[in-house]
Image 1 (cartoon, one colour):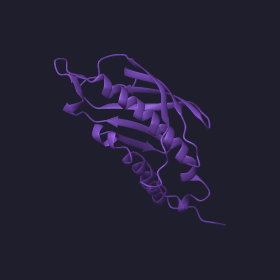
Image 2 (cartoon, rainbow, N blue to C red):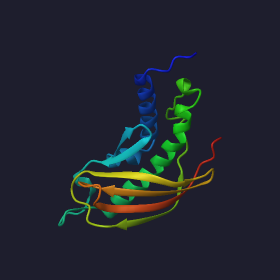
Image 3 (cartoon, helix red, strand yellow):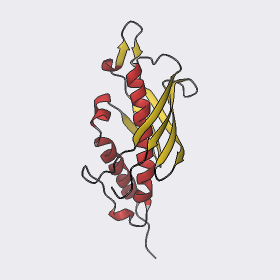
Image 4 (cartoon, one colour):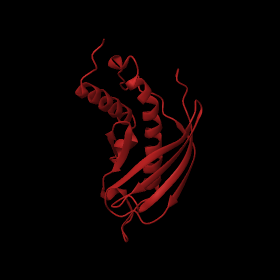
Length: 167
């Protein structure tokens, strides 16, 4: 019987796959977004930065930054869910992705953003829930909060065209 892989090896493989996925999108780096991974669950983190402020008189996060944060969270969550099967599959020990082998990302069909309250000048967090994911189409709901998860400052529902698995 084959021995299970050590936990550290599995964590390193998951973290490397997520870093490759996120590192392949320059805009994620520009925004300063990070992803906190716990098993297969991702929480997007948008650390506060002065450049993210749209109205310095309030001050408030720019609406475009908020929408980009929600959309990017949805796209990374969809890609992560797709990658998860490969990362955890039978050939998991051989699984690697780099800039050249990173999967193509889903394309946004539409995204509806609800701005529920002012995004304050502090860190923001978001989680995506995949409502439906098929071979060609996916529907995702994303919620964003700052200090209290029960007090959302924005949410979005989006529909995405999924890339084909063979390229």
